[in-house]
Amino acid sequence: MAKSNTRLELTWIGKENRPKLEPRILVEDPEKSYHATQRVTDNDIFDNRLIFGDNLLALKALEQEFGGRIKCIYIDPPFNTGSAFEHYDDGVEHSLWLALMRDRFESLRRLMTNDGLFFLHLDDGEMAYAKVLLDEVFGRFNYCNTICMTTNDPSGFKATGATVFSTANYLLVYAKDKSTAPMRKVFIEKSYDTAYSKVLADRAASYDRWSWEGINDVVARELGFDSVRTAKREVGDAFEDEVARFAVTNAERVFQTAAIGGGAAIKRAATIRQSMQERQRVFVHPGEDVPDFYILNGRQILFYDKRLIEIDGRRIPGEIVTDVWTDISWNGISNEGSVEFKNGEALAKPRVTWAARP
Image (cartoon, rainbow, N blue to C red; front, side, top):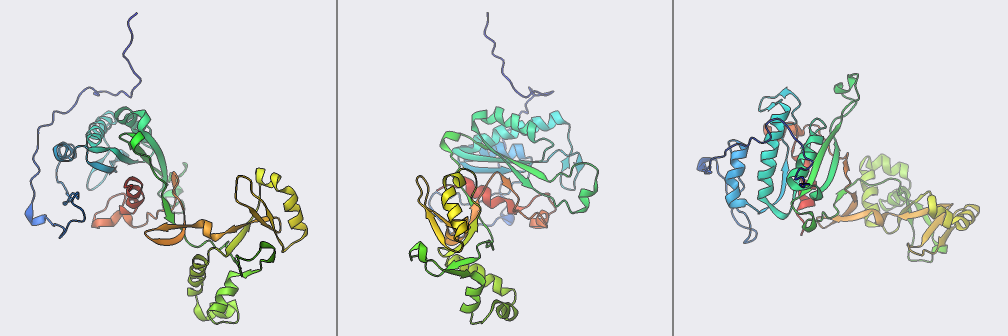
């Protein structure tokens, strides 16, 4: 019996039809050019380029010079919502949209370094189809992640319809060769967590001699005031900024207490009970495969220094970037560059940081 060569793939009308691309030469317009004054390294690609013309022809023209050299690609194609915008048509027949995307995905892949990353931004209208299409172009084994981003505020006028309010956009992330492009952890800056509201007088002392007071009281005293109320009245909103700065500077002494649950509570049940009976006294439960647990009033002591990270040489509060992004403000970013487009530059830095590994 003959072996079948068929495979599972996304099909559409006209899939076998591919455009015949004639070679194009990119011609610089000197009147619109701007060049940096110096190179940073000898390997720098010195000139950025803004290309006017059909993007598929432009990609083809770039392949000869940049094939295999691009580390990170982010594209934000038309979502195919059926709308007509001033600068582009966002409603084409579904099969045509798939063909247009397939040809561009393939060309973009040829531009990438082996350890390069590719990001595709879409909403739920075409995202699922694009996922299958990218599996075909990049290989399913080179799929890295799907990131969900919240993009609209449900309190606005858009939320008045009868259907479930849509607030999600998606980033499909692929590597050209996932085995050579492990995505490292990325952190983002967060504001001071006011739950960390207590300060140890001396953490270096034995834990059974620890004493503490409220962070607001400590900061007010350091600012020369006899009470928090007076400090807030005299300093105003800047008092909260002073508290946040103090918390970072003294993070090894600043702490909060948190409930202990699950297996951790079962293992430490006796210590927790004793702590609740002898309140305002610190107990320690020696760690086996984890650091020692410091327990106060039946709750675990958590120090603020564990919440700090280093970004651009600064020690700041932060958290790891996950596959759900809710921290990006979309208000006003559609006008970045003085042209009305759906999305803005505020999204770029986390992606570039993710891809531009040392």
